[in-house]
Length: 165
Image 1 (cartoon, rainbow, N blue to C red):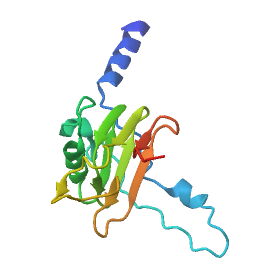
Image 2 (cartoon, rainbow, N blue to C red):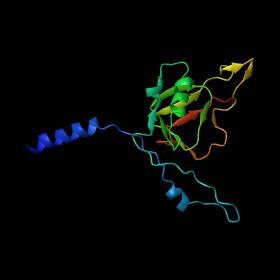
Image 3 (cartoon, helix red, strand yellow):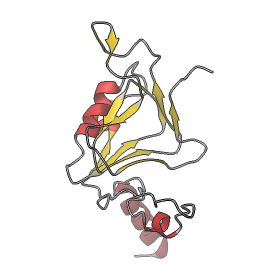
Image 4 (cartoon, rainbow, N blue to C red):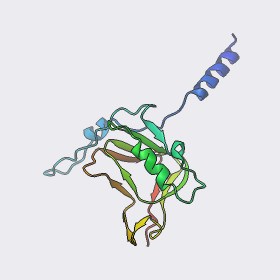
């Protein structure tokens, strides 16, 4: 086998391996550099299991589509499918419209570079006798802890609540 064939084989093999987003479930760097002011109680950082291919879920696999006018149900299905011990839900690049979402314990909500999670305009959420069920974009389930909401890019991983100026 010559050098070029070997390189092509390696490249093809790497492209066939499913890629998972790089979640920072290990918060040891944050613990080491915690800059809590003197006299304040240190913030307890989330405890998340190791992120693997098995506990990484993509919202597209649950029916979310950038062409959909409302991805709330699909994204919520992905969030609900996170194993009890924890995992990560990936929002890939694109603009994803949705209503309020609930995040359970030990979950990483990961926005890829170029991903925008955009809230539907207020008044279009599912309602119960005219009373809107949720008034916030992301809420945690009762007694949920250890939740991380992160983005790959400081400039293009965006949560847009479409709030008034």
